[in-house]
Length: 464
Image 1: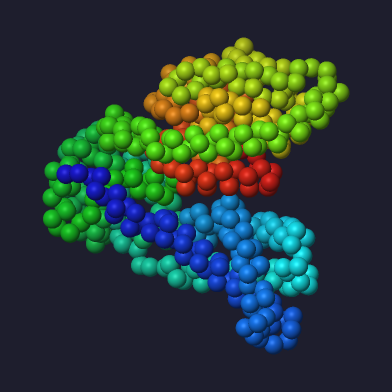
Image 2: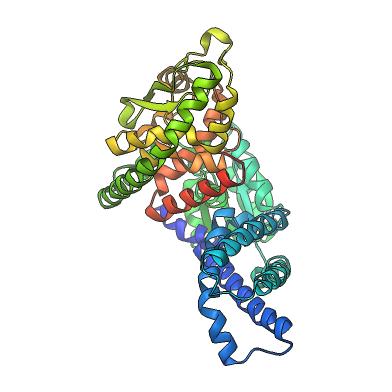
């Protein structure tokens, strides 16, 4: 049986987590913006706007609507977590609207003739905020609600725990676990336990860790269930669809062979990405030269130390590369943390705090992008000393070296506890979950998403 065919079933079960869910959200936001404009003109002029009044405003506001959607995207309003509206949506909406106010105000002053008077813009933001809250917190949850299908979960481990908790925590994933069968060293009786649970819970879906050796012993039984109208789904694929990361506990040689094509090279994508790297790095690199003299003066005034630091990192295929950064710490230890309990003995300077906060310390790496050692998007390059440690402690750590490292990446956006200037195998392992997801699913669309969310993270003081 080819269980990879069930990938389509996984996507169907998590229908609000794919592009259709995002398209529904975008369409709803655009409708909310359009109605907000109509209500704005109604409030401003005391009557419903006629065709001429609408035609005077729609062209310029249409540009703003597109910009607002881009801001919302970068703020995470089209992620599946916000789609479910489970506690985060209010904060995200407020954050996005604040950014949209800035964008709208900037647009107004750049093109004042297009939007007049100023009061229209102010009224629009008040009304659009209210309508967006109505759409996102009341209308959208009702629109996507559906009766979940009963399922049983077969597996063991922390990742299986996380999957069970997330699915049953109230999100609309289209499935609900009504039973969970834990695995042990004794493989006998597993088919009977699954059969009994299916009957007892009237379940039609079996979600199982198909890479677990105990589950493999029950493969003939699982195969037979297909002919009884049951769906058998790989827990690893469902986990990936739900969390946007790869469950490392479910990765083995079999998984690597199954995904060898996705993990390998993509000639067309790699070529287009290289062209984009050169184009963007050239423009941003040349423009950024204007701030170099100010950084030079700031660093020299503070401690008269070196302006740049050069560090060896691990690049594609495990080959060492050299990167250059503006110095933000009191020195450069090159990642040699072993003599200080696994942590650096250096401290961040006052100027360095500003450089890191604004990510300006990364600007010299643009020349590494032009050189071809790095890309704008990819796993962050690690110190050789840390790679040597993590390769021993983390299975398949070398997977992140299959592609070029990058200035920003999927892990930098979604892994909030990545270790800085210390040895931390546990968090490095968690970070690898996200790196592997990016390597498997990389595309220009995903790169653009990462770039937008990186910009949003910097502007909102999250850093990456």
